[in-house]
Amino acid sequence: MENEIILKNVESAINILLRDDNWLLKKDLSERSISHKLAEYLQPLFKDYNVDCEYNGDIDRENHQERELGRKRISTLRQNLQHYNLLTKENENEAEKELIERLVYPDIIIHRRGSNAHNLCIIEVKKSTSQVPFHYDQIKLKAYTTKNYRNLNYQIGYFVKFVTGTEDYDYLIREFQNGEGPELEDK
Image (cartoon, rainbow, N blue to C red):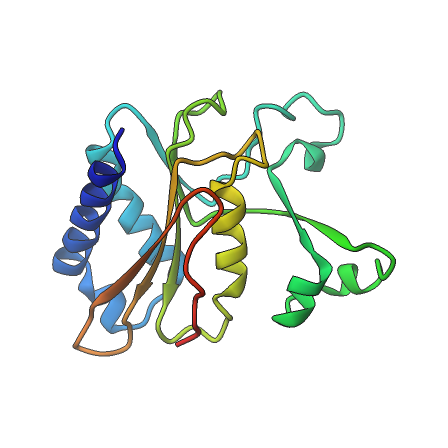
């Protein structure tokens, strides 16, 4: 599918959410509820694909003995996580490691389950009122759209920030492709 069509469909789903579920935005409800509704509106626009929220399955690692090792992961430089104050207590105990591996749970993915050959789009959703820095979303979007991870390799990714907690709901969208994308600024 061409990137222009993907973007058109994503923006159509966002506009349906703004029209039909703006209550979620006005009331500043959870990011997960907003992501879920957006995914519902995306599914009919991507009939030949599965649209999933918080999906972390990895078909290439599925048969691994340890359940957690059968999940999608990304690796990032320790200094990137330190720079944005994103190190977990577990990571802090791994002081000798330069590369940190993390399990990942994208907000929304558009793909075909059972194969990594049809990974179409990843979407990370944030609210304008979020206290969580946007930088980890940026790290995930770059990782998911780069060719460095054979089991990810998504064609395109979008960061979508919804204006919440006000009657003036709106959104901002940023594109990621080939492991590249804009710097995301908090707020």
